[in-house]
Length: 370
Ligand SMILES: NC(=O)c1ccc[n+]([C@@H]2O[C@H](COP(=O)([O-])OP(=O)(O)OC[C@H]3O[C@@H](n4cnc5c(N)ncnc54)[C@H](OP(=O)(O)O)[C@@H]3O)[C@@H](O)[C@H]2O)c1
Image 1 (cartoon, protein in one colour):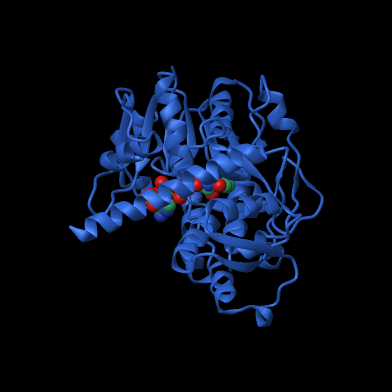
Image 2 (cartoon, protein in one colour; image 1 turned 120 degrees about the vertical axis):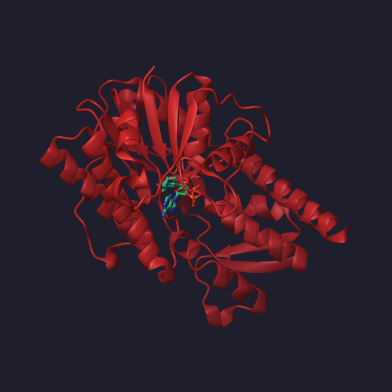
């Protein structure tokens, strides 16, 4: 079994991937940065336990290393790196800052552009000729593109063509991968994910990204101001491209198994989910009535609606999107199509997520009462 090296290994998508790799008996090397109070190994094990609701995870084939994404050789001694990269490996670059706010611009570019460049340098220096580098990108690096976003490289563009610096930084990072492929004949690949949600079969949802971030804000508001009707600046008929974590993991496993992998693949959902369905589900699950309105100016909002709008400065950029992605390359490596989210499975995910939030709130209240 080949060795799979993964950075940003304790993150949501990477830890789900690692769990499956371990189940399939792959050898996994996880690169995790140390936490304030816990070691990289503890952080990795915590992430694996969290995604499995505390179930036992066999970590016999897992080795965890501390690394520093932005430093030469990741601050790992070269003898150790030679061992880590011995033999033909698949290396997955997951580490990224998923922030969007203007204040975090330096962190976003430092991590997503500088971190990718450094990761490529380490890979080029230590990996064998047949090893493969997989950059985990985002389908939203399409920016404000209209038309079908193909599985090919697009040139770097100014910030006016993107919704935020995160999207722009991930586009720039893709083009750094491209340079390494062209100049060093590196086996480099880009995998673009759309919005990754929970498990399509079980509804288990351990991410608070995208629509779940919105649900979390609504949860907090509904408990502070129950039974209110609030309007939100969202186009009801626009859609979200949601890809379940189990489908992402299956596609990633297939990528590892297949010898010839296309350079770029869009891991996206073919059926999109309308905003109105997401909003209706949240309204059903919480004591709040949310009304989406495509045209809603700040001056027309009441105090509560303004609070919501302030928390949506990022999400707002995605309230009116109907993106189209090509998947020919992805379809070429798949044996069977992945499971698509349905209105029903998204409802189940939101239900799990909101119940979990309520349980956490209760636990917090009990602890503070002690
Ligand atoms: N989730 C989605 O819907 C989605 C959609 C499109 C693309 N993606 C891409 O998928 C990848 C994984 O996303 P995710 O949702 O799993 O994110 P996540 O849970 O936030 O994980 C991000 C990982 O990157 C690490 N990281 C961040 N900054 C770092 C730094 N300066 N040095 C070292 N490590 C650093 C984090 O480590 P710490 O825990 O130490 O911070 C964490 O392990 C990212 O590349 C993201 O752009 C995700």
